Image (spheres, rainbow, N blue to C red):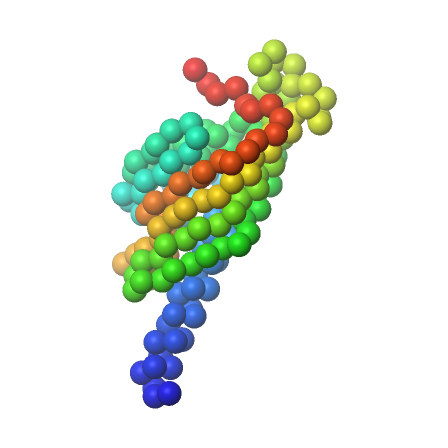
Amino acid sequence: MDLNQMHEQLRALTDRAAVERLVTRYLRSLDEGPFDAAWARTFFTDDAWSETPVGVYEGIDAQLSSTGGAMALFERTVHFGTNLDVELDGDRAALRWNQLSTHVLKEDGGPEGDGGARGERLFVSGGHCEAEAVRSADGAWRFRRLALRIAWTQGRPPVLPA
């Protein structure tokens, strides 16, 4: 193995680690916030596109408002990502991971407004995410596309604002 091959392998390993860290930090951020402009710039490109079961969002501002609005419906959340598959192609990465998300609705989050007992306030979803990440001009990896595909849910979903 020559020096160029070693350099290419090292670059691929460091890129893969950076992309894996992007996913890990993103999932943790969903549980911890805060959802502000710095959060959006950390995780998304300016032209980012995302799809969730409740809508399609285009642009970095839409990523911030949709995620912040969704997370505001919950008292607490825990997001798990597993089986991360990363395919690198230069400054682009195709990603897929399984996701299990547990949400505790706020006390007033139910359709009757009473919130119910704590066990009745759980909403759990399982599925997977498909994403595209790109290396930005500053060298950081960010999501350009992100789609959440829900396979199943358990419990009462939140009531979405009108």
